[in-house]
Image (tube, rainbow, N blue to C red):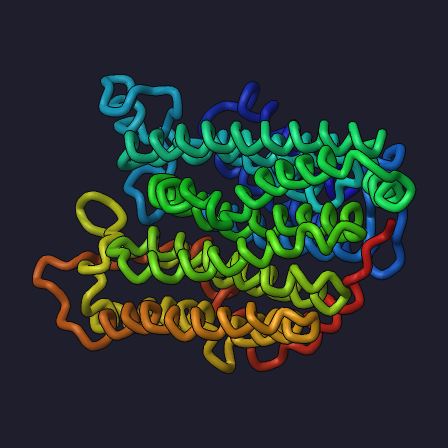
Length: 498
C-alpha cells in the first residue's frame, strides 16, 4: 500500500499536468506530493513491527529492512519536495527550466522565462522515482528488482537535465548518467540471466536453496553474481563504478543532487543487502573478497580525490563515494549487527547530505549558485547561521562526536570489527581522519578568511527550504546525542524474511 499510494500520486500528477490550468499546477503538485508521502509514511508505521510476508505472487518482501528503508526514503523525499518547491531564491521561477524540451538560449525559452512559467513536471517524475526506490529494497526476485531499478532511474535521468541555469552542463550530466546507467542496468540483467541459468529461478529464496542443492556450473553463478554486483555498485557510487557521480552531482539541479545522494543510496544499498544476504549468503566466501577490495578502493579513492576538489558539489560527490565505502565495511560482516548498523548509517547519512546540498542552493552570485570554494571565503561573516549549519553537516560527515555521523561510523566500524574485518576498520579510521581535513578546511575557509569584495550573496529562502534545513540540522544533532530510539528501531528491523 505505501508503494501504491506514491505511484498513484505520480499518475494523478500526470493527469494534473494534462488537464489543470497552468497557474494552479504548482501548488497542486506540491500539495499532492506532500500528502502522498505523509499517507505512505502513516501506512508504513501501521505495518511496522507486525508484518512479515511475501506479497504479490512472491515478488515483494514486506519485512523489517524493507519497511525501515521505505520509511526513511519517504521522509527524505518529503524534505526533498520542500526544496523542489522553493521559488524565492530564483526570480520568477524555481530551480528547474520552465520547459525541459526547449533549446537552451532559444527564443522559446526566453519567452517562457519572461512569462515566469514554472516547471511542475518534476513532481510526478519524483513520485515515480520514489515509488521505484521503495520497491527496490523490497524486491524478492531478480526481475522485479530490475524493474524497480529502471523505475527509479528513468525519472532521475530526466530530472538531472532540467536545471534552470547552466542548462548545457545539466543536460550533459543527464546524458552521462543515462548512458552509464543503461550500461549498468544491462550488466545487472545479464547477470540475472546467468543466475537464472544456474538456479532455474529468479526468486531469491530459491536461488539460496539452489546454492546447496546443486553441484556444478559454479562458473555461471559467479559470473552472474559479478555482473549483478556491477549494476548495484554503480547505483551506490562505489569504486570503480563511480565515474558518473561527480559529473552528475555537479551538473544536475542541486535540489535533485541532494535527492539522488540521499534517497538513491538508501534504495540501492537496500537492494544490495537483500540480494547478497538473502539469495547469496551461502556464497559469501566467494564474494566477500571482492567486497573487501571494493570497500577499500571506495574509501581511499573517495577521500583522496575529494582533497583536490575546488567545487563544493564535486567535493560532496566524492564524500558520498567515501561514505559508500564506510557502509561497505559493515556489509562484508553478513550478520544482523551489520544489517542494523547499515540501516542506521543510511538514515543519518541521508538527512545530513540532503541538508548540506540545500545550503549550497542559498550561496549565490550573478550566475546562480556559487559553488567554487574560493567564493565561500568569509561566508561565516556574511551569514553566520547558514555557515554554522553547513559546518554542522560537514562535521557530521567527518564523524565528529555529538553528531549523527559519529554514531553512524561507530556502528558500522563496530559491526565490521565483530565480523572479523579488522583491516577494513583500520582503513576506515585512517580515511576518516584524512576526510576530517578537507571538511574542516571548508569550515576554516568560511569562518577564518576575509570575504571577497565581490563575494556571493546569501539568498533568503522561503519557509519551504528553511524548514527542510532546520529539520536536517535538528536530526543531525538529536541523533548524535540521543541515537538510542533509531538504533533500537534499526536493530528490531534487521531481519530479512526468506
